[in-house]
Amino acid sequence: MKALAWAACAVAMGAAGVASAQDWLKVEGTRIVDEAGDPVILRGMGLGGWLLQEGYMLQLGALGQQHVIRERIVDLIGEEKTQAFYAAWRANYTTKADIDAMGRWGFNSVRLPMHYDRLTLPVEQEPVPGQDTWKAEGFAEIDALLAWTKANGLHLILDLHAAPGGQGSDLAISDRDPDKPSLWDSAENRRKTVALWRRLAERYADEPGIGAYDILNEPNWDFEKPGGGHGCEETTNAPLRQLMTEITTAIREVDKRHIIVIEGNCWGNNYRGVTPLWDDNTVISFHKYWNATDRASIADVLRLREETGAPVWLGESGENSNTWFTETIATVEGEGIGWAFWPLKKIGFNQPLEIAPNPGWPALVAWLTGEGPRPSAAEAEATLMRLATHDIRFENAIQHRDVVDAMLRQPHSDSVVPYADHRVRAQGLTIRAADYDLGRAGVAWSDVYDSDTDGPGERIPWWNTGRTWRNDGVDIALDGSRPVVAEFETGEWLRYTLTADAAGARALSVIGAGGRVSVSLNGGAPVAVDLADGDGWHQATTPALPFQPGTNTLILKAEACDACRVEAIRVGP
Image (tube, rainbow, N blue to C red; front, side):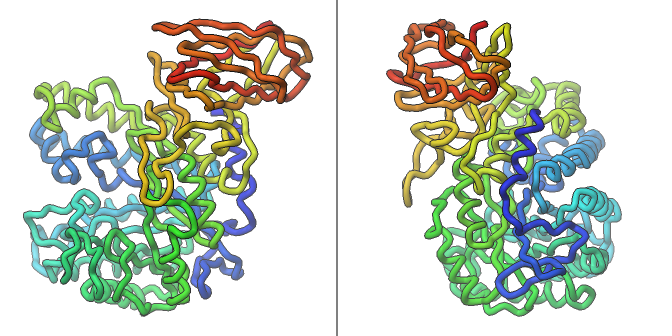
């Protein structure tokens, strides 16, 4: 990891958002402010996958809920070894190193998705009906995370992601078992939910490091009006409002100070009947995925803020392209709205940390999802424990600094930052084509597709067909373990910042295949070279070009390419 690229992520983010976790947050009109009354823009990540697994984060989307995944693992290796796997998972998925990195990068908050079963028993397992058993280990996990966030000056937001019984028809989100009463079907599940929040508020009432209580994640339920099972057509939402007011009352009995975050029906977006608000220290959360990035896309949220006089917060978003991240964050921060993107870590390329699973994982996934033969118990245990003790740890994750840059620097700056220290010395230099500069589309790179949306209501193909290495629109694939630019199409281009130890004329060699590309040095005329078709890599060399001492800018452009491939650019001695 190059320190200069990470350091640049914290630059040019404005004056708001500098309050540390030692400062209490509160609501003042339509703003979240610190104790001095200065506005705070929350910039954070959600720790999805840690205390609550969703199948898609593990390439197990077909299984969905955590309890289904767990049952399949028990079938393979038994209950005792499954318990050992989950204990190792919780110990290693999020550690202080992950939170330290968030602090270094420039985030100021963390959203913790909690599963109620880490803190209390399901209602059907309580020894005495109506009495709550509390699990010390689960509360200790929150305490440890809080110590890490406070050490980095980050605000910790507690989010009840899986409520007793499950709060929606989107089953994996809350680990809901449809064969058991939901949160909405069971008065006892609702009572336990209220009691859980009272217990949490008692524990953290005097703790400024807790930024807010996000009391119920993404309720999605049809109470009265059919809406596809997710509450998007509801007009009254009376049961949701009732439960949230009961939770608030219980919290306020023991904690008068912390912000309460509420979420509407339809995955946190349908607030019909939920307002007017019942507490003057409340923030309204909305969630935003896979839609337009302009101000019009949040017009309803802005109207809600005006109508209620309360702050709004983009409590969950993400899993899109870097361009989508930058544009969305620029839009909401331009309206004084903070955000928490999702997730910090998973198997996949479009978040800050990517889990690279061990070689046994694909075969195990195939069996778990019904697509392959059953492995032996020993093979399965070895794969699972390698995943839980090694693969998921921070130091073994792939760090996507392009994603962090797109979230924290690029919304506030159209400048570029070198992806790597490309230093031209006497012996020359080889630059990987995939190591182009960090920056916005049209500034550091240009591609036919840079996001998943191309105007209101329109969808386009995956922005990065290789789905690896970086999360820009530039198509990158792996040749063995080496990242290469693939499907480089006519008109697309990449920018590289180079530093030359001395002035001098040097030839450039492009290693690739499939058509005509050009290179341009320091704004000079493009020099075209032809890359042969066919398998393998071919080299084409330019005449010597004049390098200046110090900083130089190189542009690589596809001049006549249906789908050129470029592995590297060599700067001659």
